[in-house]
Image 1: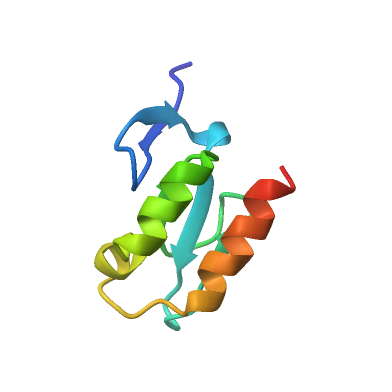
Image 2: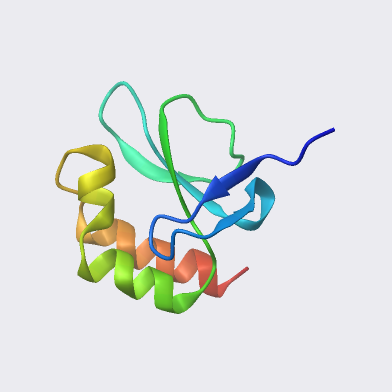
Length: 85
């Protein structure tokens, strides 16, 4: 079976889906970390490199990916989530 490759939003490198953190925007417009990787909605991925997280936050890459303003709290939650993995 083929590996499911996804691109990190920040470094643009391809990784196996299991190596990335998925952020999802559902139909209701809620944006959150998808711990299962299976939530319905538009997904964006980031690798677990702290530099990528900094770049994503600085350049507001989630705003661009989801075409909306993303709450700063999500970046803080992502930072904690990645640090604990």
